[in-house]
Image (cartoon, rainbow, N blue to C red; front, side):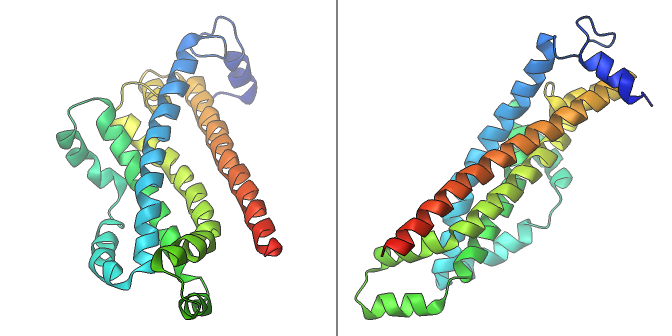
Length: 229
């Protein structure tokens, strides 16, 4: 095992012994490839998981039809999807993005569903008594009421997205931080393994922090709207 001093010297070397440092273009290329894949997968999970969770929580009949299938697929481990993903997607990016999307999608949809179910039922009854239309109930009660859970789900989804990305890149990728970890292991570049791991931790923390920042801003706006009337 390399010492922390060796890792730091390698990480900051202008001419690294194992080819990866903050001064090499390859290092930033691997980071960019992984970030791009996570952004694509996370955007898909956000665009599909949040509406699905809102609909399952709001419409009981829709939930009765979709939730059993959702719960059937959710416990399947990501690694079990790898052979099928490689068969379904002929491109290099497709399997990795798909595996990353799956874990994010389930986390996002489930937390959104729990958010809708946590809303006080009296709010729905009051809205119906006051003559609110279904779209108004969905817009003014369902979405704002589920928002705290949605952002908790997005933070969880971002974390599992990075976890799944590394697994996908190790098996089906040719670039990225996960690929770098596996490649460094097979070529006995142990300092590079730790560099890639620390980089994954930092980039993952930064992405989750951005989600928390956006969520806090929206929650403050929501609180001001509620207090204003």
